[in-house]
Length: 125
Image (cartoon, rainbow, N blue to C red):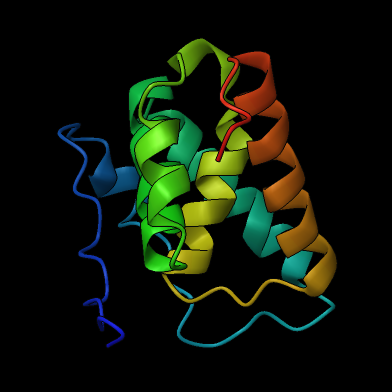
């Protein structure tokens, strides 16, 4: 049986700066090709401003679990935070929040995750 996961709750930064930066980006509608880079840049800036490496790791683990990759999610929990690039976590979160990513981006996610696992000796999955 396939478990249906609830949509993630929006992240709620503890900073009062959300008054100026706004809430976590949502992807109810997909950006068109004319403003996709701008919207992604704004989203990356929002996550970089409010969160750190610890959050990045949690977001990647959540993304793996939501994409039926529980074994990798469990293994990824043992990976040092310093080996994970922020952009990977932010893209995972954006995808979880509704951003549709293309096949190439999905391959990139898998590649980055496999590289991080291999660096940390976690290749036996």
